[in-house]
Length: 399
Image (cartoon, rainbow, N blue to C red):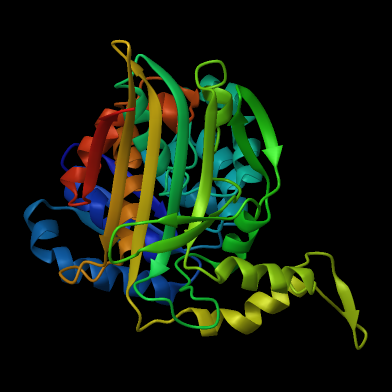
């Protein structure tokens, strides 16, 4: 194993898994990094990409970079690849996270994931007693939203004596609106639609409320080059924060950002029934409209030649020294020509890797299932994400 005997397992060799693996090699002081995926072709591509970027670093530091092909829905295969690692990141489809989390507990391996679909996170949160008994730490929802956006909100809250409200806006977009929906797929489309129409929990007037996803659209003015964007409620990104901050914060809310017109087009598709999840019969065959829609349109939304960007605005209001303050964090990230990583790879993959590295190095002392906002100081996260070249602009003003 590596320099300090630390071994990392990255499940999923897609865009985010590759970026997280790259970060772990540079910042995690590993002895061994294992990338596992159902597709041997994807594993081969991931290893080739990382070795192209980091071959001298890997050799100098005697880091083992390995890959395994496995079906992550098969528990025995998961157990086999999990053994002997210090920490695992699930960069797999969200519905596999509970099984991976349970296996991590059984194999006594620390765990984190990209999250994003709160129904799965709820299932993991219920594993707290089991994780405590195994003396391991699980931190779900560590990507960009949920994840980075909540850590930045926490960083602002740490500077205030009392917090009144948190408003978060975030979106992964093509640099210019292109295609039929003005949108470029930066995650699995089925996962995107799951967040559009999943459960949405917020804090409003001190009370946890479940509100309709894909609702409450508004237009927000940004600085150039973005100018005007639309925002609407989506599920998942507030994660466990409404429960963590109940009694401490009056309002905690999140909205997704898109180019103007996207909301209306998706609403049109929804009203036609094309995004329904209840199966229908067609010529004697049972099909799920949403799955058919995803299969049909996903290729048209990949826009592989188009660059992406990540825009985030976190606005936190409260009091310090009897002054009413508003702290804002702005992020506008583009792709990195040097590494070839997209903005979403860098912000999502690097954010998750930061948490994975803290877990592997035993720098998070609480065991059990620990919400990100409770386990990792916001100021620490901000320091680490800036270290990776992600520009986070802080603005503090009296209101």
